[in-house]
Image (cartoon, rainbow, N blue to C red; front, side, top):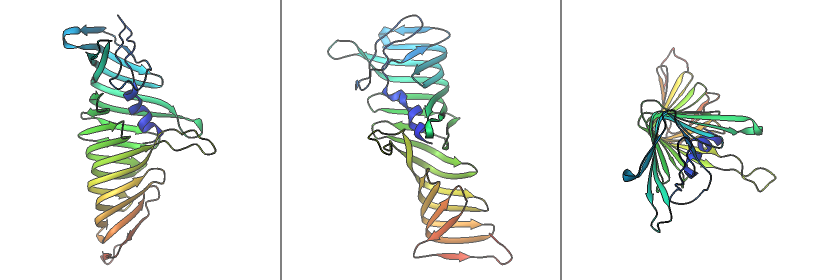
Length: 281
């Protein structure tokens, strides 16, 4: 979860469908016309054009690439419509089906290569809403900063620069993990120190909602909601906080946890502990 969490998963959302390799080429701009970069689609079994249904289908190890970003699936379907002024066509939705994988090779800190991979069974990009949704049994995002998994869906909302993992969502860094029903990641582009240029995209904060808990060596911390800061590897849980270590339990308002060191601290106005004799943390 890093500069790449967005750069890959994610650059797809700005693409034009200006050229299609294989049997023919096609010009299908996005409805918002935000970017004129070409998206090249290839497939082992060829490209099918169905004018009456307004779609192009690429089958058999289908690949879509643009710059350092590659989208792979068994099948890719681009849905389009004629523009209102009759000047051409515009893409309204892009579907990816079967063994979906998005790979991004970008530069991370100190210009080192930073690879991010996102996988799922199916994916849909809704152009008007600027949202990409992945579903399936193997939902996972792996990046240099950590791993994000979910049971129900992985979403990226381009206009709001937000990524959402739904259903038994987990963000992990090393051996430490933050669990929740929903995890929402906020993406930013920090300014490069000493310049006016913006740096690579990265996740600045992750909000956790519902059944939130953090696992660290010898303890589990639970709460109603939480915040996680990837750069610092620090999570803050609040609301009915409970810390369980062996048979010992601490209750309080807020817990601060360092996921790298495993050190945690319980704070707030109401702190209560139940310590079982003969047991240690």
